[in-house]
Every structure is written in structure tokens, then in C-alpha cells.
Image 1 (cartoon, rainbow, N blue to C red):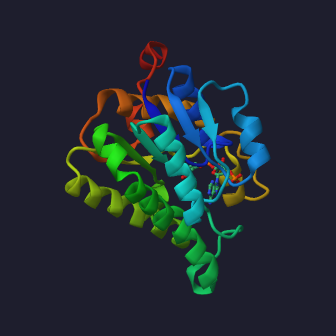
Image 2 (spheres, rainbow, N blue to C red):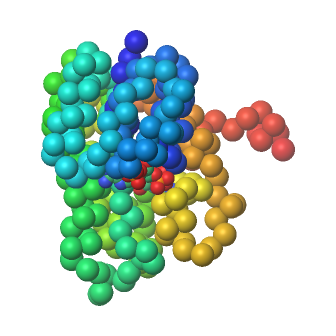
Length: 233
Ligand SMILES: NC(=O)c1ccc[n+]([C@@H]2O[C@H](COP(=O)([O-])OP(=O)(O)OC[C@H]3O[C@@H](n4cnc5c(N)ncnc54)[C@H](OP(=O)(O)O)[C@@H]3O)[C@@H](O)[C@H]2O)c1
């Protein structure tokens, strides 16, 4: 059975993706910083190995690689764990450099380090890399300069990786707005109940896994097939 490593799988999009792949019979290695929350989230999911830790930590990334080694293969890596940065979102003029460094370590350097560490099993499986991006990577929203520029760096890293690793599928994946803790942090005090649940994005991820289109940047909204009822209404 295939194996996936999903970072940031204790809630939000990472957990929704973990549930879907576990339901398909995949084996999973998953992480999140908070051990109890991670254990609680994946309790009851079969064939899931939780490894608590921070993707910015080299020792933790080695532990993830060891868990993948024990699983025997790696078909899909989902670099999903991410940092929004300070909330409320600061303008660039006053952005704390240490906070910005942390955003880049989480959203760019950690994901690349995991890709480097797992390059061999990914290549052996003709594997797929999802680097979870954002529309903030390509749009200039006020306050989103730190997070957005980190996701833009992640997008470019994904594009170059695709050119260098033709045997892999490398996707920068933009899920669109989702009703999650990160989204609430971006809009403190606002009602975000009109945003779609992260589960609504998972079919787009499954479609990329199943159909393996060319490497590139994909938006979930462009991949989610509307139901017949939606088409006729
Ligand atoms: N929500 C949106 O509207 C939206 C829009 C566009 C793109 N995205 C992207 O979608 C992805 C998922 O976001 P989400 O909204 O589902 O977020 P979320 O609900 O806040 O979940 C984030 C997950 O990542 C974990 N995590 C955070 N920092 C980590 C770190 N340094 N190391 C390991 N795990 C870490 C969290 O657990 P711990 O706190 O225990 O570590 C949690 O499991 C992110 O890449 C985000 O940038 C989200």
C-alpha cells in the first residue's frame, strides 16, 4: 500500500487529507508540534504513525525520515504545516525580522529540507510532492507580505524542483480560503463561518494524486469537479 508523509496533520487541511488517504488504505506518517493534539486527532485512524515536532527542527525532520524508512517507501509528501506569522498581520514597514525569519524557516526552509531528506524514497516511488501554497503568493494583499512572499518562494522552489526532477510530480497547491485556525488568525475577531471547510479541498488533492498531471501550480478551485446538481442549477 502507498505511504504518505503529511506535515501539520492535527487539524485543518492536513487532518482532512490524512483522513481521506487513511480511508483509502494508505499508510501515513504525520506531524504537528503539539503531541497531545496530534495523538487525539489521528486516534482511530489505521496505519498512522504520529511523530510530534516542529518542521523547522532538523532532529524532528530526521525522526520523520526514520518513520518513513520504517514504512518502507514514500509515495506522497505533503508539505502542509505553515506559519502565518504575527496576528494581526503587520505591514512590511514594521515587520519584525525575527518573526519573518520564523515564517520563512517554517514555510520554505523546512519543506525544502524535508524534500532533500526524502529525495531517495520519493524518486524510487516516482513520488509526488505537494507544497501547500496560497493565493497570497501571487496577489498583493495588504498585510500579507511576510506570509505571501514565503509562499511565493515556495512556489518558485516547486517550479525549479519540477524542472530538475522530471521523475517526480511537484505541485504548488493553492487550496483557497478554508475555515481553519490559521484563517481565523488572519482575520482575528471576524466571523469566518462562510469559508468552506478544509474537507472540500481534499477531492482536488486526490485528483492530482490519481491523475498525475504535469508538475506545476494548481488551484483547488480549478480541480474540484462540480456536482451535476451544481452544473444544472
Ligand atoms: N486556511 C486557509 O484559508 C488557507 C488558505 C491558503 C493556504 N492555506 C495553507 O493551507 C495549509 C494548511 O493550513 P490550515 O489552514 O489547515 O492550518 P491550521 O488549521 O492552522 O493547521 C496547521 C497544522 O500545522 C501544524 N503546524 C503548524 N506549524 C507547524 C510546525 N512548525 N511544524 C509542524 N507542524 C506545524 C499545526 O499543529 P501544531 O499547532 O500542533 O503544530 C496544525 O496541525 C497551510 O500551508 C496554509 O498556509 C490555508
